[in-house]
Image (cartoon, rainbow, N blue to C red; front, side):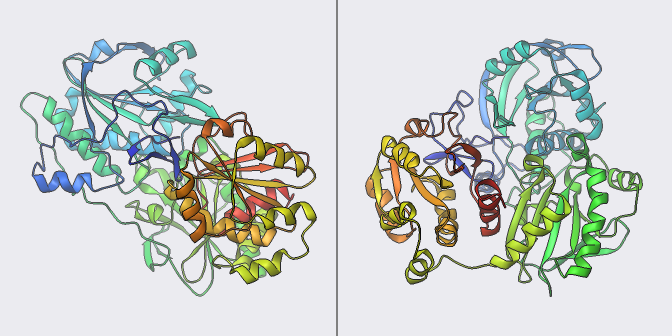
Length: 552
């Protein structure tokens, strides 16, 4: 699911995607000071504004568009029926494994913090998944998240939902099989007027902070301004990075050590509600075989981590584990604060992370979007990531040595290393001339922080694979002097073609969500995969190159 939030020259989205400010967004989304009731000091507002993982909220003042939809019990529900109450309204994907569970957990937290006053607050959700709109879909989400009687999760015909998405300016799309929507959460006053808009950010540790913000806003709108039973700071909660040795409670009552150690470690982050979209129990059971292989083959042992911050209750994990066919042979730690998931860069669930003995992330893998790997594929990717190791971009002499003897068509690319060439037509012609070779195109911009952060990974990959794979850059929406200055300090072994986002559709007809985007083209000239967002580790980029265009 996409996160839309205005930041300087672009909009940052899930896993470090930046898109231009012309993209459709909610009417007047601007970052504004929140009207806090407690704490209400100037320093508290400044602290909130400095937290990149907590939206302080945007004040609104217009009538909330009315609607009538069907809830998880199959009953009709209209917005007007809640006049006199504060309504907290979220647009949620009924099969979401990223932002939506954070949003709904924060909503429930807000009601708890309001105590008896929660009776005057109504939680509503509207389905934002155009492919899962049945009453069974919204009921299943509500059941797995422990919210059947906590809220009303509404759905309807696709035409009705589209009308409401449009009325609330919610951007909903299916991008390469993945649901992409604006993670908007509205607070509506007792008078039926929109009062505040929040956009949920990808941070497990910030969930309770968002709940407190919602509770404070509801209190401000209710008669008598009831007390909010929470005194959380709005300061950014730092993640527990893999370089830090720590311990978390285990599912069997033991402490589970995480962080650097004598050997590399493999982690699997999950939550019990992942079973709505994947056969979680069977896959966790199958990983028992991986764990036994790890001991015999000398590959990293597995530790699973349950994301307790978004579980429906403390009983969810024990009940789930009790229902598995076999006892798990690996430890299951419990991340009670969300700091572990944030520190390990978890963006979805289930989510694998491979960590070196020193605590450096070597590889990550999003099961939700890419599917489970069978045991042999999992072991193969892990061995490959370990073999590559944590190396920095190679120097010029090393790159030249690695690429010596490349086929003429690829050698021609290397001869134009780091040059900025003109235009989409020239790029399209270059792609045609490379028929017979796999191609990796990296769409980037010097203005895009995630693009700059991952550039060194492409420098290393293009040197390692450049005798078999054609690498090309697409510099999107950039000033040529800025792009050239960036390239001068970040050399790669291939050229980049400068163009606009619109011109890039000549290469990728379906378009791209933003930058960075990596396009994989097979030997027949067909696009076989598109990776939206930044690569954060070499192992995952290299694994995608091998699996998408080299058949690894």
